[in-house]
Image 1 (tube, rainbow, N blue to C red):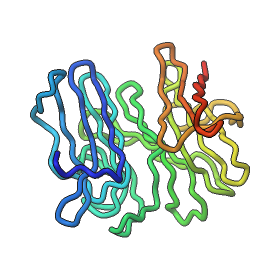
Image 2 (image 1 turned 180 degrees about the horizontal axis):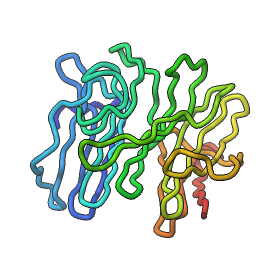
Image 3 (image 1 turned 135 degrees about the vertical axis):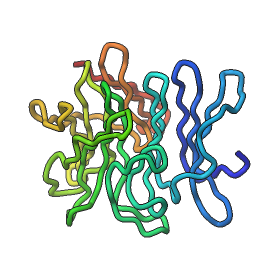
Length: 239
């Protein structure tokens, strides 16, 4: 694209056969997003779109099997909230002011079985603080939702939310408590019910760095925010 923006992040994913590129756009004084599929040889393939969610505040592109699952946070079009595949599904509503302001933040999106799970932070429902939440939808149309819930009552902002598949079919969800500045971890089942107690761990994770699930079901991520940014640490949590 000749109109991709440098001020926004995008996602690049590989499904074993094709690359998917999901990125923010600027054109005509407006902000949107574009989705492209690219062969290993660099050829632009059919599918995707030239202009989708507007304004696209945040986005993820998750491969699962031979499919790609794009998720974006919109403050205006086609509505306000978290959207899958442009207009295929609104995963969760949140307010937006058409000028870059929203009441939500994407924490991450993962595939488990026949469903996609999104962890996010939101201030909907009269909440005073940012609160961590979990929502899902089935991979196949009509993308039925079975889970949409806030995970715990918040006495302070719950920020920098993360999610990853943990083990075979559970979810590891993590966030930072703004009051203590500690990162909390908890394991949930696919119904959004906590499995055991939550635990604070003395580790850090960058806001734009998603957790990754390794082949054995453990979760890993890298962080270089310490030592003046000269030290790279790799953290791993095993089931």
